Length: 375
Image (tube, rainbow, N blue to C red; front, side):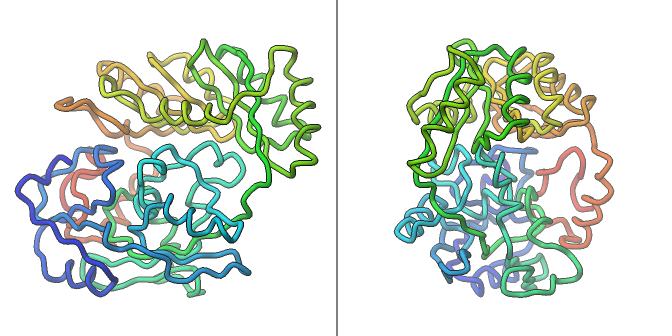
């Protein structure tokens, strides 16, 4: 992680220890989890302390009847899923780096999501409560078992995509869903130019896909995932195949592992995460110089790997299309911008940073060049 050379590392194991760590240190602090997104967003400026959240693990409370779970933020999501599985429940979330050990807190802080966002949204939609430690050591709670949000903020939504720049996320309360009884995926060979029209036909009909993604491998394919009961799923899959034509066929579920590989990208290129209106996404992607790509044609989220010299241009094109973009991988030594041109909501972002972290202690540089140093 850039900016951490020579810094002191602390690894608290409970909420009190997090508070003590913040109060007992001076200067800028980087918040680190499993390290699966250490080089995302803006380059981290030099910090004095790295606060390692991986000691904050374990379930606090699981209410199977209410389908909620409270968990410490450093818990790997895959470990949480294993613990929930015997109850027939899970967090309906499938970002690629979950398999790499990404923590619950890190997934919230980076606004990550996977193909399941088509139906269940991102963690912004699944988090119903948080506990956060602020720069002055105060503990703020919002949502979950506490009905009134602190200081009028919906803290869960404020922290989603904050990249550790607002405070230390210590505990999270999540909404759960039943594990699907059965799942199948249908693939259609399809170039990007025709993918949007086919996706619109699926989304406009009574087909209820659980995921709908276009991937660039094998010349381009449209992937349709269906979930449901074992009895109903075959007939639903047949209707999708009839809609898409004779080239549509069932495909092994490991196709989603290949999808995750494209999302991660390779060590040679730069990876950009894009959010745009779904109807604009295929045209936007056609204008970018990507090497590989995945596109959620219902969710509006895409991930592209680009040559290093195409990143600045891509940021600009996404901004012109009314979308957002954030850098998710940069080759070592590549001085690439983590963000595109400033958004209209920059004043709100700056005001939140000033309110929650007035001295700019947490995650300096993560929102560079939008926010430089202490606000």
